[in-house]
Length: 83
Image (tube, rainbow, N blue to C red; front, side):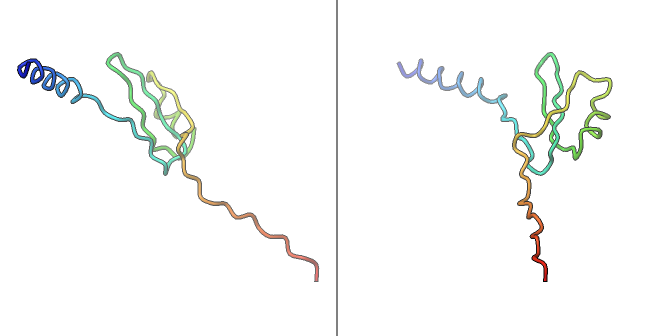
């Protein structure tokens, strides 16, 4: 029974090693998603859609809006009353 538990533990560890989490950078509003046979990737390091489109040109890729983009609090200008 211990041998079976040891084998299952080692097999689980070996299968879990190649897994990685995809991170979205909240500092950039545009991401580039590339497609590949072994799996794609997402690169969130673009400040505009044209910048991302230039990088995606000629590749199996598309540009997306970053769902985790942390926009700063925009303060609207206050309307001042007439003196």
